[in-house]
Amino acid sequence: MILAYRYGSLAFVGGGLVWALVFAAIGWWWVVALDFVIIASGIAIYLLIRRGHFTFGLLAAQATLAVIAIAMGVLLDVPTEDAPRVSHLYLLVVAALGYLNHQREKSHAQLVLIVLCLLAFVVLASARLATPFIVPMPDTLRSAGTWANAALATVMLAACIHAMHAEFVRNDKFSRDLVAALWNDEFQLVFQPQVNLGRSTIGAEALLRWNSQQWGAVSPTEFIPKAEELGLMDTIGAWVLEKGCGTLAEWRKKPDFRNLTLSINVSASQLNDDDFEVTVHDILEKTGADPQFLILELTESVLVNDMEVVIAKLNRLREIGIGISLDDFGTGYSSLTYLRRLPIQQIKIDRGFVQDAAFTSRSASLVKNIIQIGRDLGHEVLAEGVETMEQHDLMASAGCEKFQGYLYGKPMELRAFQQRIEIETDEPS
Image (tube, rainbow, N blue to C red; front, side, top):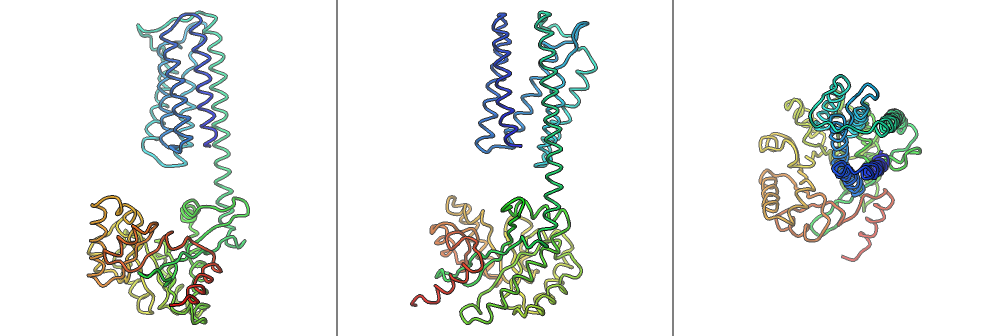
């Protein structure tokens, strides 16, 4: 899709250049100026997309093409007895491109642009729209332009339909492969170290990865929302929990590992499952893991649902010794009421706050207040996303005592994590 837009913008430039030469040959310099606007727009859109500004680049491309199509339809491409209007066909192309972009990333601006394009298409297809500013074109040029624009618009629309079909097939296959991934043993856990003030490893967060036979290494930001959409997170979450607890049980057998904690993320859909506590209890019984070293991380999205039900479930989990951590603290529905009522033992400061704190005094002050509030309420405070010593020192000086981030170690396979612990244990005190 990205390549299609990039090459499409270059085709846009090429078409503008061709028409600029044609109109320059007959001396219509104001139209040549319009063509140079088209050329400049195509180049700008290409550069925006190439530099990663994909969403803005796509919207800019569509808006520019729509304005040009409407301008051509009103000023240059007015229907006559010998030649119909064809420039409005490009508005269908813009609407189709907009639909593809909206499927990739939902956007109100994109929906508005799609509706405006369709309305403009209907108007231009239904009315001559004669104005005093119409520029009559030579019959030969008008005839050639009608055929050329009709052919180009048709090809572009066919390409959009092909892209839509390819995207639907991809989504359908992606979904089917995701459903099969668990049974094909394509998921794995990686472990990111969590450390104390002395930077000694005290535990890890278990993170899910999908190494697909078809798609390769798929980002969690791509497959986890799709798993939620397909209703798979309960099953996948139970697998993660069982794998993690199995690891905890193995650590319990080794003196150097037995005091390590393991944090496992729990989705809102898992927590909303009526049998969630039973599932957790059964997994603990099956694996033999000590619940006192298990920490369940919840995002603040779980608080959108019935607060009393959430609190009751968490209390039952606490009764068997499981720790509860509030992840990404500060990005959602945080309030002192939640912190006071929820049976949590730990809050994790969101990485965005941690990273901003080193650059602005306002963010630094906010982080210090969060740490102080957490400590006043008797909660552990863990800073995640720490990448520099400056950030570490800032968090430590504010009273934070636990940390996680690339500064201490990236997510790693179980063997690498266990080797890390063995090396730390062998080091002289």
